[in-house]
Image (cartoon, rainbow, N blue to C red; front, top):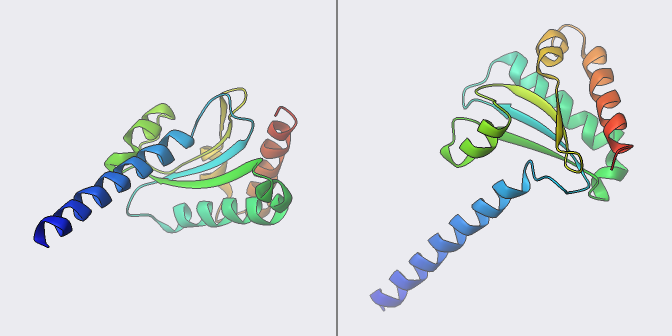
Length: 142
């Protein structure tokens, strides 16, 4: 009985590692016809960092709900302090809060981090506009 429990534990651990690895490959994949809005963050976040995520998630879920359901766009948050995210953080050179619109088909990433910090708290409408325009431009390319 103890041996069976041990085997089950080993199997579950293996599946967890494989699933996490596959999920990380999905983020930032090239040659995939979809747009990824990626919000990188540290484990401990300030008000502005939390607002950047809230606004970006809301834009994707409300303004692009049809594209989201069709799989043409996805929204991801990535904790750069978590070692399992080191490769994707390195790929985008993100060491803390960063906001990217990534085109999987072209492999190009648009860095909206500066706009995020500039407008998330002071002018939400402006940040939403920047993000919508970046997404729309990239949707035309997939």
